[in-house]
Image (cartoon, rainbow, N blue to C red; front, top):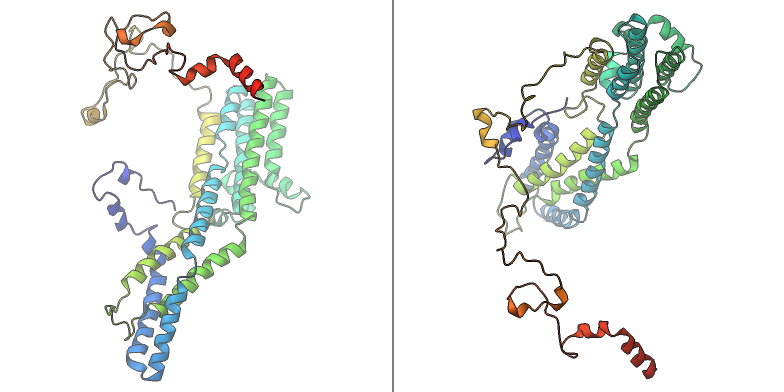
Length: 419
């Protein structure tokens, strides 16, 4: 699924990124090698037909077709429409991940307001966690290929422990023809409400906070469904795909070497055209791979791993780690008035930096004479000190234009006299 290479580029080095080019899984080579082979094969066939099968008038006609295709192929704005399309797809791809539901926040809050290691309190917390995970599995089954393969029927959901057999019967008895992923969340909402009524939740604020967190989780589940339902308009995808394939279809003929290209070197392999194919087709394949991140491509989301992680974290939050805290002890710096620097290992000493106190902290301080306060800046004469940066006050009426702003009344009188 997701290809991780962060560690390889953690530190910039000479040819550091070039090491990534050796990776096959998730690479551009894996995405486009079939299309590249087909393009090269077709280009070679057309080139052989021209060189060995055509002669006379037919050869001249082919050369005219080559000139026409080479002239008009560049009129297709491939880079513009493809760049805008990929930007849209990548933005949508990241938005889908940031809106993926995580149960942690709700269960953190629940551990603070449904307190107790007794069976009744444990059942409440674990049941809410189960229902949240059941709703998540139900919504992911409808949009993720890998999750649907893992839980194809309700029996598989029962076997995994998200729901019981009786709960599945109650779920199927809900008379609604639309997607019913929200039913377990309604049950969780009722469990929390009953816990408040029975006094298991002692705070109205805590009850409200739990309901809000559960509603937020439900909204995130709905967003997963909406992204699967509302896609990028098909016409846009068709336009981009047609533009790329028609462009390279024209390149198959327009980039052929012909005899009247006297100034051109006869390259049997069109290097520049292949580079264009690598960039443009690779761009298109990136969009094809990311347009639905709930599939089974190399860079799609690891939905089954996320389910495993959420289930393990949920059970730890609501049960195994509930009210389990180490004894309160004095830390090793408890008796120190000023905590000294934390220790480094020798391997990490290269990352140690001086304490930053501000960019002007080490600036040379003015002398004692320069530190004297100027109580009346307007009457200060800079000729006696030679300080730079202080504006000299004009003593003559006509020396400075600032005199105009100090005699507004006389200016108004002149203005109205002129009128």
